[in-house]
Image (tube, rainbow, N blue to C red):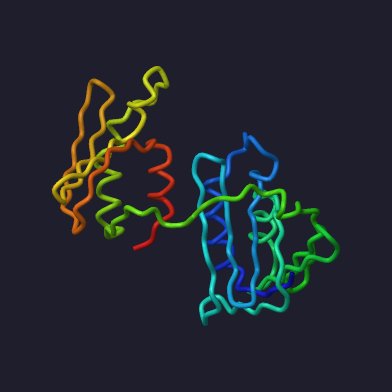
Length: 213
């Protein structure tokens, strides 16, 4: 595995997926970012088993991506973020030298770090479910900011730590309460779906930080 990419762009993408990684990870592999490099793209994955984030990088003028060799590796998130942030130069080169030994190079600096085999990383299903709908990122941000504040931070009643999303007759109802406060947001969607699910506030806050405009 070997590729060259714009340092700032790569750091931003690493920061997004690392938001899903917990320091109290249930599995050693979940403490790292999985980097999959194919001939046409790079896929970064981060997860703590509760929330998983995947970011795909395609070659563009913004990222100056050049893929020299394919492969995959898992690197401890805190180390790769720190190295990429501090490394000198506008571009960074990442190369797997031997099995899991990975070299990260800048203009006048070079780091070597032992990663983990990507086969040790649990399989995560990112395929779209049968029932799904599309909503603008601006509207989703509205929903999260106008409901999450009313959720409970006490685990005594876990269901109150999340926002309830229910849908019927093309109306999406988003409700949060800690039994003292109540917040409700209603949004019209194009799809006539019927579901009822509660999503943890913590997970929604991570989504809020990760989505763009």
